[in-house]
Length: 259
Length: 342
Ligand SMILES: Nc1ncnc2c1ncn2[C@@H]1O[C@H](COP(=O)(O)OP(=O)(O)O)[C@@H](O)[C@H]1O
Ligand SMILES: [Mg+2]
Image 1 (cartoon, each protein chain N blue to C red):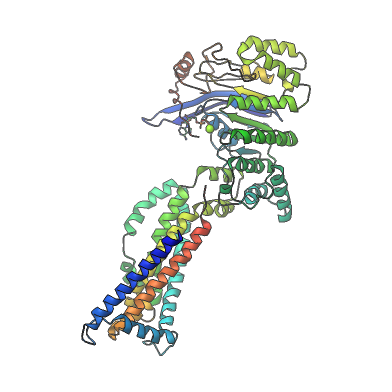
Image 2 (image 1 turned 45 degrees about the horizontal axis):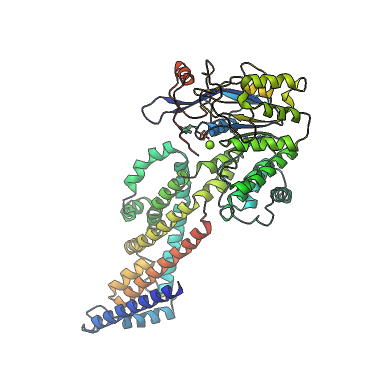
């Protein structure tokens, strides 16, 4: 078991190293200022940016830490509100087969719509780009949690609901002591998918709205032709995505149960 | 008026294919007095759980009704607690929290420390001290059912409904927990209705009462047992006469054994319960056999009869019998063949 893990780590490290070497060789073979920057250049930029991540020199020049924080704040608001709405809606759908079947066609139509497609509508109606971005996050986090919650609640074992009925629990206690814990594994699975797709969507949304955020940062650095910054931002986005998922994965382990 | 009356209860389910309805049982009719322990035995899939769920209020009867203390049962309530075959504990809660959920529901006005002390008492009572913080998944089947029993008894229900509570417990543990059940029932004096597919289990529990609960009805229980079920109505009559004034109504546990198709003894249960002979027990297309059984020896093929007008409980296998014919006459479809949902 332990030896297996060591082997995996070794292979993983070797592959990473090989990729870096190939990348550096490829970048080094190009005339300076024209090709893709190599890992050494990116590392230099990273060191530079991480040395002072939270500086603020006006709208077009902010530290990467500030940009990421802005994106995470948007994500936090949009995703949290969407999750609350989706869980409440999902519980209602899951408890009522009629409602579920009545609402399902609309959900099916809305689900495949890219959250960015809503952007013009939001910009037109609320006339605030930052809030529009939050709404885009909201739209992108809504459906996975809604669908998973509805499924989780609909498939709660009859026995648990029977016990709740015999004990004559009030609807609130039934919700918090039986329905939500019983459906929790499914709900958290939905939350994980949601936060992933929201993090994907936010980069694009911020490229469109401008101002702040890691998406805007990427676009801005591209306009400055600072490709090392773009590559470093890509890595940072990926890393944050992993951390977000890991957090929810811990939550899901906490809430998991065996029957 | 009896304490708990199962009054001509009929249950129809929508047929799986091709519309129509399937009759699970029809006109089940019997009465239970306060403090009694009544067991009903029937094959898997014969409708025991369905009947129990109707009494619990989890399911609605298609006809007839259940009356507890003069009031018709329409929905589940704290006065009737169920112990389920599959335990039905909340797997995300600890043992303690499972029982506390019930105690809090029974006593919403109690202070937290009070509730906890009460819960602990029941935890100790079923011998789970030290396992309070465990989740059900970490317990054996026997321990889980102890939690189930503690949860049910902790609400101090008027009627306890046991749905094959020992079916998923290994034989050695089963005996111990059956003892615990008897002990708790003796202490609480709640009314118990148990269903099981295991004839021996019903008999074992009945036996134990005969030995452990000393009251003047015991002699009659033993006498009835000697007469045995297979002696037929004559035997039961004999028993009635011999019992004399004391009569079997002082007996407080009955195994209602319904096993073989077409083996219906209408009114048998009523006679056993010592009241309302005549219309008291309706039963089934197929059959039901009522009465206490004796020892391990099991004689088959008692006298068979069609069930005539008051046709009801589908308890048992399903080769067509005149009983089933009677059911057709009443416009209800074939009973399902031995399907079990449990
Ligand atoms: N919801 C249902 N819909 C249709 N048929 C059902 C339903 N529940 C139970 N049945 C049928 O009713 C019969 C009795 O079931 P059940 O009460 O679970 O039997 P038992 O507990 O005696 O094993 C079975 O044949 C089963 O298939
Ligand atoms: Mg059953």
